[in-house]
Length: 248
Image (cartoon, rainbow, N blue to C red; front, top):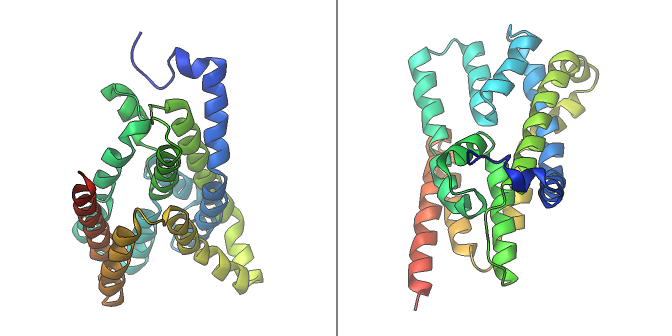
C-alpha cells in the first residue's frame, strides 16, 4: 500500500480522533483566515476580478501575502516580471518551515508532498507550538499526519469560504460600514500577533526578537518582501546558533 496520509492509521478510529483534534486546533486560524479572505475577496471585485476568479486564486494559490500582492499589482498595472520576482521572494520563507515541522510529517516523500500544500505561516506556527508543547511535556514527537491534515484542511477551507463571502458580500459591507472593512483588514496582522505570542517563550525569545527587529527595520524602510525573508532568515540563524551553544 502506498505511503500516504490516508493510510490505515488515518482511517482508524485513533486517526479520526487525531484528525478532529487537528481541526479543533485550527479554530483560531479559521476565524482569522475567514475575515482576512473576506477582505481579499471584497477587494477583487473593484479591481475587475470576478468572484469565480477570486475564489480560483484562493483554491490554487492559497497564499495570502502573494494574493494581496497580485491584487495590488492588478490595480497598479505592475509588470509581470516584477510580480513574479516579488512573489518568489516572499514564498522562499516556506523553505524554512518544512525542516522545523518534519517531526509531525510521515517519512515517505509522497506523503509529505501530499501535505505540503497546507503548510502556511499560521499552520506552521500552530504545528510548531504543538511540537514544543509535546517536547516540554517530555513526550517523543512522532509523525501525526491525521492531526496535521485536519489542521491544514480546516484552514484551507476557511480561506476559500472567506474569499467567496468577500467577493459576494464584502463590497456591500465595505460601503455600508467602513469600520467593519477596516477591522477585516486588521485581522491578518492580528492573527500573526496572536500566533507569535503563543510561540513566545524562554526557548525562542532571542530568535523571535531578532526576527522582529530585522523585519521591523526593513519594513519601515519600505522593503516589505525583504523584511519578511530577512526577518525569517535571521531568526532561524539565531535559533540555530542558540541550539548549538546549548548542546553539551
